[in-house]
Image (tube, rainbow, N blue to C red; front, side, top):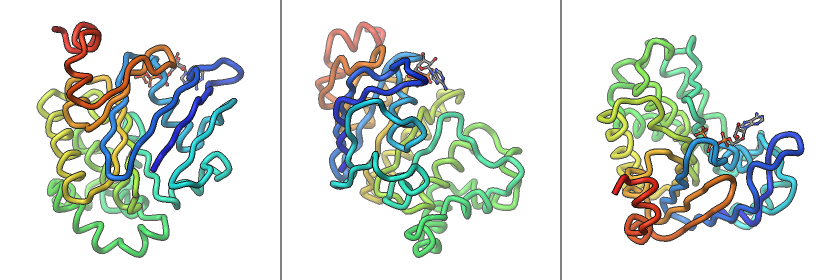
Length: 235
Ligand SMILES: Nc1ncnc2c1ncn2[C@@H]1O[C@H](COP(=O)(O)OP(=O)(O)OP(=O)(O)O)[C@@H](O)[C@H]1O
């Protein structure tokens, strides 16, 4: 579905990603893990079009994504749930979800989608009239994920959904991602610093360090890798 090949990208002329290749198959759950500053968010910004790469290619279902303006990429079926949630604080929960349904597919499937989002996250239904800025961090993350789902994506990209959340709430979010994947067959690309949970949830993983993919493999292979165990799993 998504093929990222040899991407060099960064800010001004300083590269952050140094030849990154990542492949995501239809229906797969792929995690990209790595330390602070490795370039995980920059990778997502390059996919969604906020950062323009200096070289390399990205195709989505065979379309050259780099020739599609950033504002049009969600219409192809790509939803980016950004780091730090970025909900609209002075809009209600319902209005935030409505804002997410701006794509043609999101508009056409709004009724089904809102039902599905409220079933996944009942607290959003209970608080649908409440201003998003008054929600807890975990609830705001649920809202950010719900807003992504409201666009009826084929690919859901999540940038550190566990950031700043208590471990129990982060675990709840990871469980929900697994549930979303099972129920909707959505393709999921996750970047995370919580390596154990991210690899456990995914089929396939990439380890990104200082702008380079240093390891990749299926979930079990990566979790058994001595370097991953020593550097990220505290074993
Ligand atoms: N807008 C920007 N302008 C200049 N440099 C930036 C900008 N955004 C990020 N960087 C730099 O790019 C590098 C990679 O940042 P990035 O946010 O992609 O890493 P990350 O792996 O997502 O880490 P984190 O978990 O801390 O967000 C860092 O050195 C960061 O300081």
